Image (spheres, rainbow, N blue to C red):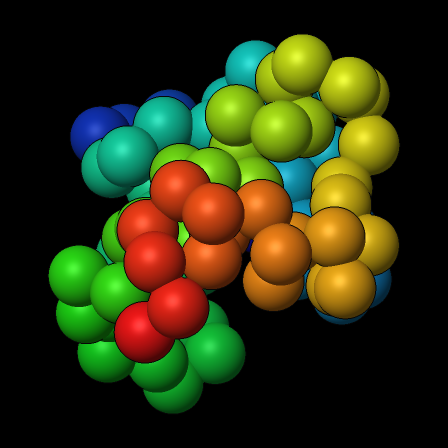
Length: 77
C-alpha cells in the first residue's frame, strides 16, 4: 500500500499497482523509491514509452520489441 496526497493506493505483493487508473507521474517516484532507484531522464523515457504501449495494446512490450521500438524513436544510444 502506498500513500499519495492522503490517498491510499493499493499494490500487490510485488509492489505493482492493483488499479491501472491509480497511475500518475506523481506516483512513479514513490514506486522507484521503494525499489531504491533514483530516476533519471532515461528512466522517464522508458517509463512513458512503456506506459503508452500498455495503454494502446493492453499489455507490456516484449523486451526485444521494446529495445527495437525505443531505438527507432530515440536513436541507438
